[in-house]
Image (tube, rainbow, N blue to C red; front, side, top):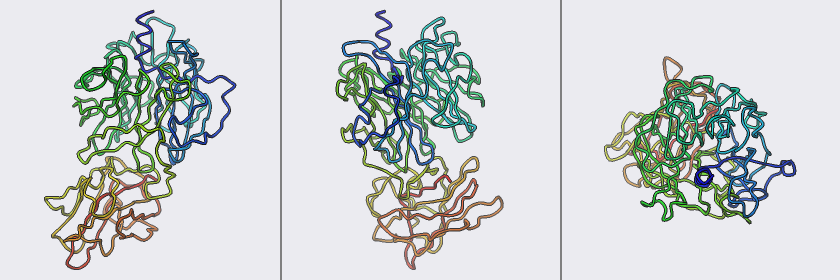
Length: 479
């Protein structure tokens, strides 16, 4: 039992357990951290669908003074502004899996093929301890049912982790999905078959994840893969190894090898530290748990949300943990919806040697048109019409772009005009129903149009006489 309690204390226990008395769906009038305090939540996993961010989280039900996790169900919260949250109640529980019997721990939902697959950590009541199960539903809110009839990962899986918990699933631009999981310092990875309930090949051991302990989270930004995870070392992470921080690594391949980059989230007020990252309405967010709710503790945790920022070189800035939470982001501006630019490959007719094409889709939010803190694209000394372009490996449905122009008050000025074009399979043509292509400074200029399905999108930019043009950020949004 001593070993088991140790695993629970430092393992990312993610289960949402809600008694019938608190299943009522009601908005929480809160723009603060923790985001909900009417019950305790843990190990949050964010998902963006359209104009809504969902958080799938476990529910802590341990009584005061109980030094072990009591977790039986998973709950779902949602928000349309990342600040005010609605509780949708428990949408899955241990009973969702007839072959399981206890410990509804960390989970994550991944959309694929018009379905929503809920990967969970659960005690399978068979040989060994923790397994990974998969439920499936037709919407982000279910209803969810067992998708496999048994565990996807168990102790009998060849090369399984020392503790099979904390699944994170990532689907790349080519449609291939990957599963990462593990605890007890045992990170594991595997491809998933298209049906999302079978492994496609051998289980591998990722290389380069310095001080990995548990709770992996996988995402991609600007063509770079990120793997964030909990660590409990005392080498710049924590001073007491009963606690954990969030480290992260990057790679150019979804299966690594990985290069450790540092700590992104310091120790929180609970011993466990479990986090997820998502982009919503043009802004990146980190969701995590702590023990800050009234009556909270290591086994009575609560979910928090804060802003996540990136440096120009793609590294993540250390998160500032707040009690206020992020400001409301209702998606009424240019960043509404899913920005497809970070997954695109950028090209141009010309870029100055001292400027950077990477500025286009590195996720920066400029302070003004002269802000170079997240790099700048410029085409000085070229004049007339130049272009920048995005290309995706498969077709995307796009109906809006937002452009933040660069103006250095020297050779680069705001353009005279611009136009959005798309590749129709044989040539570039103007997007249909295009609204005005704005050229204002110090703001995102939004251009809407009838949705097009294309692998390539182009912004044609015409300069003022005797000037060149530049861009600080160019967003393209999924229809």
